[in-house]
Image (cartoon, rainbow, N blue to C red; front, side):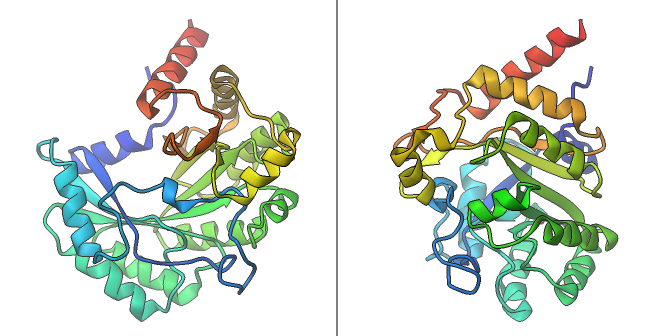
Length: 296
């Protein structure tokens, strides 16, 4: 019984094997960090929470892939996607991007790449390049949308509008490129209904994949400072409350959009709140149990 569309299962069925993403830090920055659109980045963001030990920008992208593949080698017959994850991975001239992306595609068992970026950091020539690349291998552009509400995007210092997200997603999908988005549930100033309304607006877009995660208060961020000064600025969900929110979100999301993730896990020594003490797979097991119980 399928409880929701699992994007990881879609990849397994497409390629006939388990597909593992290998995170890469290629040393990018973001336009809301370097002064082009602002300083300091998104208020919630500390990118050091994202990466395994092998993932360091001082290493070449090929070396990071090699070490990542070695780290995940326990699964026999596994295939790999190069996941350009840190910061904005299209924030450079196209020639420079090609020098980063293309060497990893020559590696054994690497079937393609996933590029995490912002909707205001792609243009027509860049999307045309990804479309050509997608004729040879798997390519997904994964956009940090974070919220469909402009008031929230402004509050978290995102530096782009939701209209820009809509344009980028449509322009990407029109070229036959796999298209994903990322949304954070529970951002400052957003109610439960605000979070659920994101599903309604995303349903209007040609998305293949969606990642959700709970808002986390992480040390070293602007949000952490704001929260310590005034904890009332956000609603921190208990795990059961967040499971309920995800269930209601899935009820409103069209099933054609595959879910890749429901939560994110920051390192315990960097996380201020909420600390649920569960791993990703444990959370998914609890969520699936809730969904099965609802179907009885």
